[in-house]
Length: 164
Image 1 (tube, helix red, strand yellow):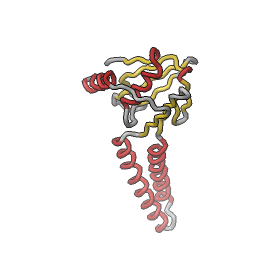
Image 2: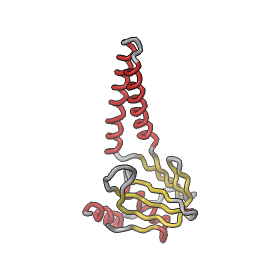
Image 3: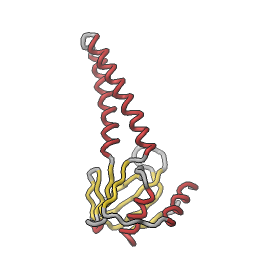
Image 4: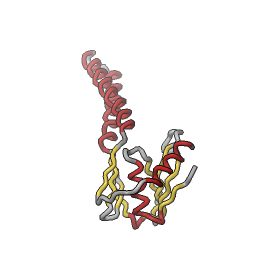
């Protein structure tokens, strides 16, 4: 794919600046999408709850309100919870239930792939640990190139790029 090849060229040109702790949060587009769906779901859910309350606790309105509020708060939780940290001093990848030492990594590959139920290709990092666990990190964070270059620099021979 044309954009993936350009992405690989940018990675090959970029030099890494050493920092002991690097934090990566959600990119701007994803942040706007998750805010743009989470906040309206919460507002619509609150309106449905109010209508259900004023109609003598109408169960269908209250049920729909609960569902919409649940989905809206879930979107906002994912928005504010997303964070990946590369701890170069302690040689670890941290974030979202992940605490992985660089020594535990057997192979790390960057490639294009489909994550989850979607059918959209995106750039992913596929990590296989020594105990054969597979971890897939979709690159939906800001400053992707710095993340890839830091991983490439830290993992050296364990890191590879699969060209599409």
